[in-house]
Image (cartoon, rainbow, N blue to C red; front, side, top):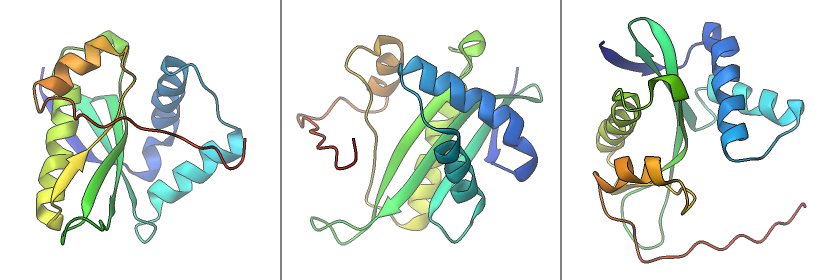
Length: 149
């Protein structure tokens, strides 16, 4: 039951799409096929700045994460935003989520970033147990103002 993490590859698209759709379903949302395709193209474009990782358990692709680096007005080093994280519900608790987060942290250190951060729904209790094992929740509240509803 070994968990390994590697960058997403073009041949991962069909499994990535299954996991991506599971992620969207979990968050009770949907995106157009065009947006999903755009997300995949961005993940495959090494010059775009959005990166994707795949977790594998015993050779099966079981989890994904997407992240990016951004400058900060508050710090001399970039921040790393872990935007999406999803593990197949049948293998949750296997260490796949932890392995994905740890790999993002390693890559952020290699990049010279000063922080890794992410968000989740307050009600996402199972994930929050994992996230709290890394760091306690910050005191900040996120507000979202949609520009293109």
